[in-house]
Each structure stands twice: as structure tokens, then as C-alpha cells.
Image (tube, rainbow, N blue to C red; front, top):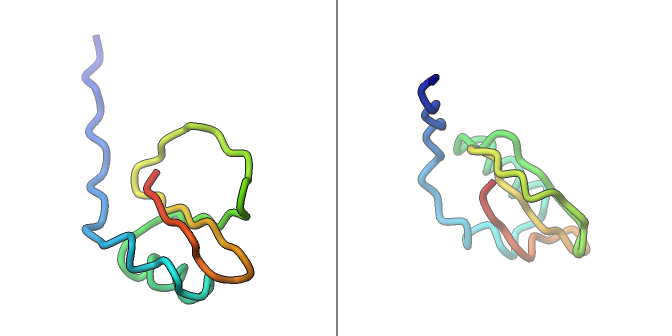
Length: 71
């Protein structure tokens, strides 16, 4: 049986710090801190439950981040 791969280390970051920022600014900061990819979604967007290590998700309403989560 093949060994289970070790996922990449995720950046140490305070995700709550992105809430309230303009979406474009938040995406730039997240990229600079090592998150890749960074995904912006509208409120209520339908997404899969796929977890991708290193990805940061933003829920954006009227150009402002209202929620942030990993994966």
C-alpha cells in the first residue's frame, strides 16, 4: 500500500483579520502571506466540500469580505 502523502503546511494567519477588508486588498494580502489559491465567492454560492490545503476562501458581499475560511 502506498504511503499517505503529507499535505503542504498552510500559512499561519489570523483569518478573522480579512473580514471587513475590500475583496481585492484581502486577495493581495492572502497571496503575499502564502495562500494559494485564493477564492472569492458571492454569498450563498454553491461549492463542493472538497478540501484543498493552502486554499483560502472569501465570501464577498458588495466588494467586502464578510467571511473567510481555509480549504
